[in-house]
Image 1 (cartoon, rainbow, N blue to C red):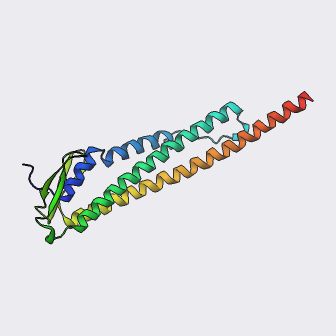
Image 2 (cartoon, helix red, strand yellow):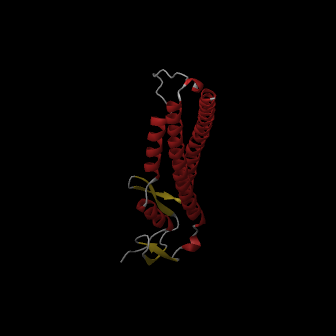
Image 3 (cartoon, rainbow, N blue to C red):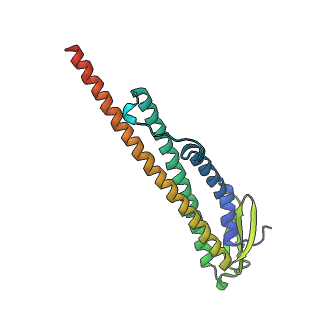
Amino acid sequence: ILGTITCKQWYQRRVRESHTFQHYFKQINLSLRKKMSAPADQNVQAVDLAQLPVPQLNQLRTQFEEEENMLTQSLAQLKGVQSRFVESQECVAKMSKKDLGKPILVPLTSSMYVPGELANTETVLVDIGTGYHVKMDIAAAKQYFDRIIEYITKKMEVVQKNLVEKDKLRQVTTDILQLKLQAQVQQQQQQAS
């Protein structure tokens, strides 16, 4: 017999079955550190894109496209994680004393459910990541979700800002590359004439 399970516990199982938000943050932060920011002790030099040869411009454009794709994927992952926490927060907000004993379906896997009933509407079990759960009252759980959603939103803003910057760099590189290629074609046409 499975026993009773809260709406929050159900949700936490679902999150654990996929990935925890900490996994996404670690992955995104590592990628951003590697690709987007240089350590303070490194000397970062500006490069005049117009002075680079065509092969290097091509390589640079490809790099910017790859970074854009990585950032786009990171943003999509963050949006997914954010929506899960918003959904979880809404679930906790909807819990009331009148729901006590209410029948629910409890997922054992992503496609198999068993009947259960809501045993406690005063506290919930919150997965705080890496398999750790904390018993919280409803108010504390709401505050926790507010903090997490705010944190995710800030991360999304950083990723979005970096995405816009990479898109601008890729566009400038593409424009310069096209100008150089047009100049080469014109030069070849003049030499052929």
